[in-house]
Length: 260
Image 1 (cartoon, one colour):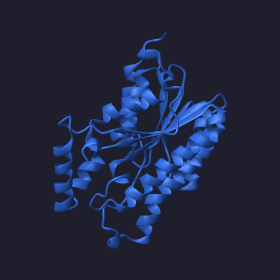
Image 2 (cartoon, helix red, strand yellow; image 1 turned 90 degrees about the horizontal axis):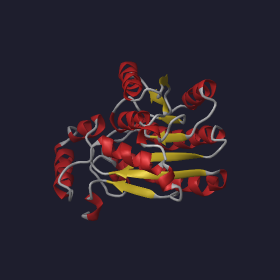
Image 3 (cartoon, rainbow, N blue to C red; image 1 turned 135 degrees about the vertical axis):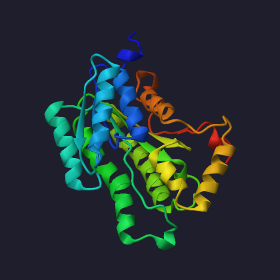
Image 4 (cartoon, one colour; image 1 turned 180 degrees about the vertical axis):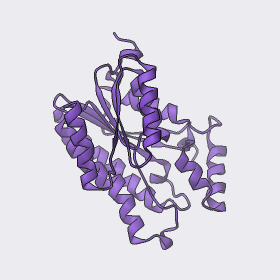
């Protein structure tokens, strides 16, 4: 049995929104286990290039390539998967991590902000899965990254929470509809993690900062969950050790939901 450094050797892994935060940590984790990783980014080319360099430095046989694509647009989805098809001809793992929103009360959001949030987390997910499944000839694994706002109301998180709740349900349907194709699909519900997005959210209002502080205080393990721990959970769900796990939502939150 191969060690962790060969766990995904020769497999092609596509991770959306992987130039920073949870996506970045997940890309590097797969790379450290030998995978060929496609690093997707929307605008930060320099950050994506750094992730590519880190992946190729952590494992002698891992390769990485950065692909610019805005997955809130249909042509962006096609651009990403056309590039993957051309270079690798297959996908073994697809991780849907990219998300965007406006941290505002629902009374203040615009039609454009609603559309953008759902275009990426919902429309982009469904269209990406359609393309990914076409490249999973011998089965595959799909993981979507959700969040605590899908379960608990957070100030200013109405749009994103609704989109993430839809994402979790859609992931279950993917598991049900594609299980016979040898495809497993699961979602990870993240509690509080230190990312650019969470730090930005905490600065949007006094209520947001107080709520974040409360969540940290309520976390049984006494600390927020680092992106690296979430990345490890993603690889666990994509390993053979989780062969019979599909259609599930795994909470990776340092025990937070046990107290809420």
